[in-house]
Length: 161
Image (cartoon, rainbow, N blue to C red; front, top):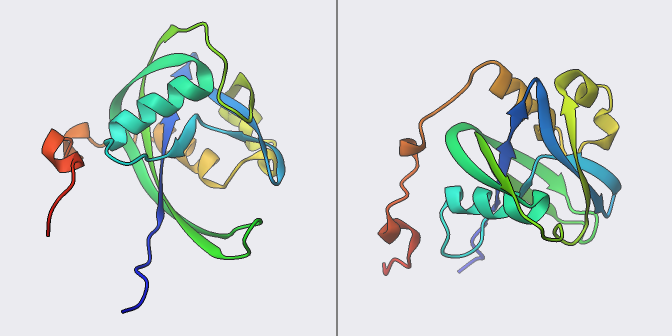
């Protein structure tokens, strides 16, 4: 039997206030990059739980997802391993909540608010092309209800097949 191919599943939060978007600046193996609050889906959590957790870890703010903006697939060659990696990104928009007095996640240098045009002016600093693509889809009004995602507790548990 051969190995089963498994893409990396990630989530991202699109948070807009007065025409500006909440972004994070992070240290990566490619240098300092700009991204949405984003990260990997952990075992036994739903996509919505993951985006809430990642937003809190990276911005110290609560986040309530209200809609799915889009699902994105991208392939990259890992700088560390030299192997091709496929990412499936689920981008959510929603409401920013309370700020907590806590340190930002390891590697996160700061949060910042940028307009779409300010972000578009520095593509070399984006973590990936999906950063601007997600914002453009959000600005076009692209939304799907969260009910499209099966978030029933049993759906996030372990299935025996």
